[in-house]
Image 1: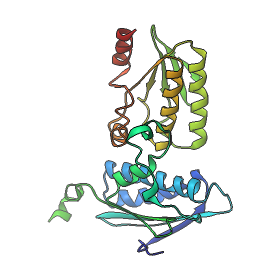
Image 2 (image 1 turned 60 degrees about the horizontal axis):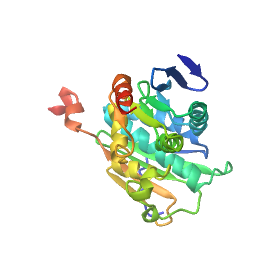
Image 3 (image 1 turned 180 degrees about the vertical axis):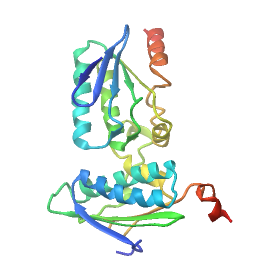
Image 4 (image 1 turned 90 degrees about the vertical axis):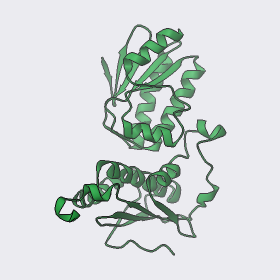
Length: 150
Length: 122
C-alpha cells in the first residue's frame, strides 16, 4: 500500500453495510469537537457511506468472512480517511462517468462521483483496494471561536 | 394518509398519488429494497399513475436511493405515467445537481406545485 496512512485512529469492522454507522458516530463526535460545520459533516457522512459500501459490496463482494479497515484522523483543519477492503481491487479510471449518455439512466455508478465531489482529495492505492480521502474544513476561520481568531 | 410498512405514507389527491418518505435517513440496502417493493406495488396498482414523491422528511440519503429513483421512473414510464419529486432538502438537491439527475427528474418546490403541474399536463 503506497497511500500515506492518516493514523490516529484505526478500526477494523465486519464487512456488512450497517457496520459503518458506529464508525461514523466516532468520526462525527471528533468533527463536532473540532468545530466542523453541518455541510462538512453531511459531506463526510455521505462519502464515508459510499466508500464503505463500495468496499463491502464491490471489494469484499459481500463476503461475511472478510473485514474492512477504516483509519482516520481529524484535526481543526481537515479530516483524513483511509478505507481498505480485502478484495482484489479495481481500476477507478475504468468506471464510466454516470452523468452522461445512457449512464444517466443507469441505477448505479454514482458513488465514486459523489466521493470525488465532496472530498478535496481521493486517491487509490495501485491495487485499488484502498482509498485515501481528505476534506478540508469549509470556512475554517468563521467556525473558530473568537479566542482562536486572535 | 395510509402508512405502509416500511417507511412510506400514501395519499391520494384528485389527479395524483403522493408517496412521502417517512424516514429522515435512507441508507440501508434492506430499507431501500423494501421501499422499492412498496412503491412499485403502488405504481402497479394504478392503471396510469401520476406519482409525486415527497421528500419533506428526508435529510440524508446515499447514491443507492438515486438508483431506486431511476428504477421507479422506468417503471412509471413503462406504464405511461408521470413522476414528480418535491420538497427536496437543499443538501440533497446538491446531490441531484452533482449527478446531473436534475436533468432526468422533474423536481418541484412542494406538493402543491407538483400537483398543479400534473393537472396542467393532463
